[in-house]
Image (cartoon, rainbow, N blue to C red; front, side, top):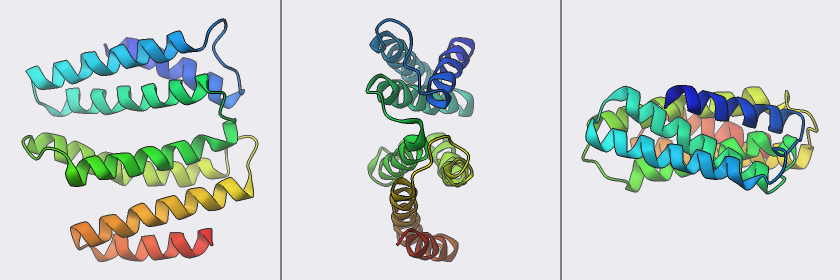
Length: 168
């Protein structure tokens, strides 16, 4: 499962970086990524542990990336897509099931890493657009501010305000 997921993510990264949709019809890659996500969710349900949780989140990321690639999003919008995914995961963290503690720990790690990855890729992706960059910073700032309020952490509150100011 992890090797197939790595292969799908490598195809997507090539597609995003060179603004190429997969050859032929672009939706089969999204279908494979969706099947990987369903399989990873089933594996996590059978055995709730850290590794299946990480694979489930990576497969979900691959599904969203494949769908956006099939919709022909430009490569400069990749950081925006990651910021949207970060916001979605934050909503899952807030309103999702609290049954599995390992799931919340895994989400916490991803919620720490995704904003850093978004900021790193913001200026590194080809076709950088200042409007898209400002929107990405505003989304990251809103997510960080919401996380700071929900978790009562000063670091996320300050980061949210700084990112909102940088995006405005």
